[in-house]
Length: 132
Image 1: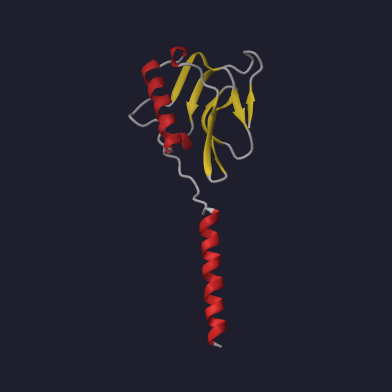
Image 2: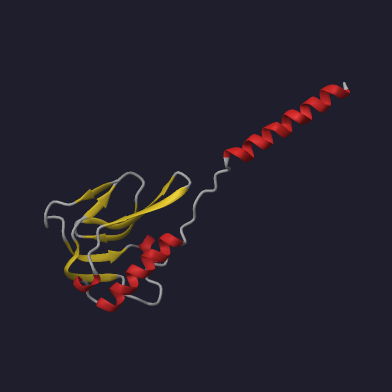
């Protein structure tokens, strides 16, 4: 992932929750999907596989990514005192944190479980061989 910050050249004065972000619950509670402000974000983020959940004039402001068996989120938003509507911006940050908390991850079996399964199969093969 790359955090794109070049002084204030990448600063976004507007931001929009994308259709994917809306579908993923970022506007839950009836909050706005469009924001303005002096600096909604100071930077954008980019990278392969990054989902665009909140987009701004400088690119992706908030995005998520399945990484291995987990999930990671990346963003460049500023504090909400620079955002309008302010109350909705506070709730947007809460919704983003809830999105990350509730993100679905891929369960990967632990090595010990795979080892036990292998030992069990070896045992079954040994018993079968002994009966023959």
